[in-house]
Length: 268
Image (cartoon, rainbow, N blue to C red; front, side, top):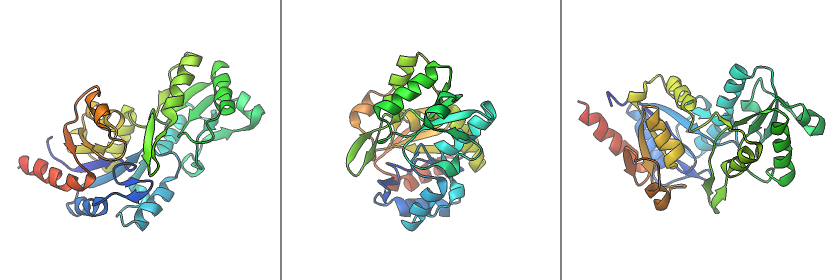
C-alpha cells in the first residue's frame, strides 16, 4: 500500500447484525473518521434505501449520512441507465428500494412482465416463491437480460444464517442457460464506483467485510487491500475453503483502527 487514505466498509455482519451495532463498532468508526480517512459504506443490502440505512445507523450512533453509503440498488440503477437505457425491468426483490432506482422503468403484472427487457434480481425474501421464480425464468427464456445485484448465498440475522438471492440465482442461470450480469459486490465495477466515491486509488484503500469471496477477495482482485472480520456470516470452514487468502484477518471491526494504525505507521 502506497498509503491508507480510505476505508470501504460492509455494513451487515461488520458494523451490525439485524441493524443492531456489533460491540465496539460505533467507537471504531468514530476513531477512523477522526483519523481523517475517507469512508464509504458499501453494501449489497437490497431491503432498504440509502436514506433509510443512514437513518438507522445514525440513530445507533454511527457517524454516517446517506452520502457515505453505496448500495447495490443504487449502483444497479446507474448500470441500467448506462447499458440498458429505457429498458422495461421486472424486479424480483424483497423490500422497497424504489427511491434508489431512480430512472429505472419497473414493470409488473402478467402483461408487463411478459414485455420485460431485463429481469433484475435483488435480495431474497418471501417474494421468492415458485410463481415469481418461474415467471422470471419465462421472461429470460423469452429474451430478457438477467441482471443481479449480487450473488450472496446467505447472510446472518439475529435468527441465524438465512438464504439469500444467490441460492436462487444459480438455479435461474442453470435453467435458462444464461449467466447473470452482476452489479453489486463482487463485481469490479462496484469497487471502482466505491473508490471514485471516496476519491482514492485502489492502493490507498482497505475493504472490510465478513464475506471472504464477495467482499475481501473480490476487493483484492481490484487492487484494494482486503480485511476479513470474524463476525457476521464468517465461518471457519468457508475461510479454509476460499479461493484465496485475505491480506488481513481481525476478530471484529473494533480491531480495525489498530490495524490501520499499524499499516499507516509502516508507511512512514
